Amino acid sequence: MQFVMLDPPAMSDGSLPTPTRSSVTGGSRLPGAIALAAALVIIAIAIWGDLPASVSASLASLTGEEDLWEQIKGTGALALLSLQGAIETEPLTPMKHSGLSPYGINTFLEQEAELEKVERSLRMIADAGFAWIRQEFPWEDIEISAKGDYWDHRWDRNAWEKYDRIVELARAHGLEIIARLDNPPAWSRSVGNAAGWTLAPPDDYQDYGDYVYAVVSRYRGQIRYYQIWNEPNIYPEWGDQPVSPESYVKLLQIAYRRAKEADPDCVIVAAGLAQTLETGPRNLSDLEYLQRMYAAGAKGYFDVMGAMVYGLWTGPTDRRTSPERTNFGRVRLLREIMVANADADIPIWATEVGWNAVPADFEGTAVYGRTTERKQAEYAVKAYERAATEWPWLGVMNYWFFRRPSDAERDQSWYYFRMVEPDFTPLPVYGSMLDLMQRPPAVHYGYHQEDHWALHYDGEWNKGESDAAVLGSFRTGEPGAELLFTFEGSGLDLVALDPDSVDGLQVTLDGRLVRGLEPGRAPSNDAPTIRVASRLRTGTHTVHVTVLSGRLPLDGIVVYQESSLVTYAIPAALAALAGAALAIWLRARSRS
Figure (cartoon, rainbow, N blue to C red):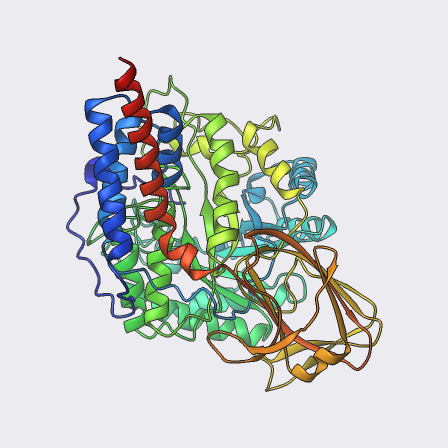
């Protein structure tokens, strides 16, 4: 996050045009009509009578609002939005880099003066259950004085030394690093570090490419994931000039090529775009910016799309998704743009996610929304849960942020995203996330690869590569090999290169032997599958696969959530709420 003002509710009437949805499925208008009618009933009851507390709680689960009147208005808005076509995200598309642990967190370890505090931070992060840190490698702190000069003349030491220690300690604690590469040195711009220009791109993009090459070369085999820039769609991350998706794409293309030259196995994450409704010139809607990136040739120059996925003024359950809103669900619109540009097989990672717990006595403006520390803790968990159960295309989510080295910035609203105080006192959100991450992992709705982090393999499983495999790789289970996992959904397929291998399998589901395994076809790519179960009770199920004879060439798994439930979930919920509210209201009136 760049510490600039995002769009508060008063700005929500911005003039951002609604993008054309050529990829949106039309479908029946019946669910929307049901939702609208139900919403009108709820609103009427709320106006002319008391809305039951249980109904209010349910409305909060749909709108992400805590205030009753905002819940009522939000219900109406949600019902109207449901009349529109569905947002097309192609959730059952196989993707690389999407089956990893989703638990990441942002750190500022380069600002620590004491090595012991770096180590303590990483220990707390790892002990909680995080798998990733998103850590900046500021260009201005590595190639400080001149091109090719990696010596810190201020302290007379190697400028790489600090970052080598961070990498070493992170690896010692089992943490993967997403290295954020930005913040150029003054020498790279003719204007130097003039006001408004300290974060601006260099005059010569090849200089940035050389820096990327230097970092990736040095940490080859130690760091695999690199983010190219940060929030280029807002001031001052692109300097005191109009933002330019076309220029960013040129920078991205150079960085991508140089990074792959240094390490062909590295993974490039495109910059997370700030959530904003503005239309320029210095701040530009993330939706318009992304579409212009594609128009400028961005496709093929990133392996993962980055996104800022803040909740801002509402909670993570807010289901009102439209270009005129900045909320947790806005990321679905970025995904829709990717689908429309034939990038459905590229996942999104949340470079930053969180809620701002600005204290009640804070004297400044709460520009990033406002919630309590208790709600911050609750929202964080619900955010990760919603993404896991509904958005298989959203992979790693990096909480913003772990801690600052000091409390010198307590007068800044962004300071209150923190998870731990500078003295290492944990806030409630640390405890709630720790509890979440200690839960056994599960596979949720989506088309997942055989390397998904929740799959547990026993026995002899050999990795292989083949053009016939969905994304080029698979695992072959030899006789005696076992696969165990938990999934949440209503159906399950095993994607197998050889569907005839079903004859040598034994599968138990929730402890009961599955009889009559049948061949099938996967959605989106028609790959051969083995149908394990369908039309199950939606919930948590355990699977145990044993290879009794032959071989099982496993190429992935597909977890289903019955489409009828998804299609009618919101209308049905609103209708049920309306019915409950009406019944309680009528009973109360009859007794009065």
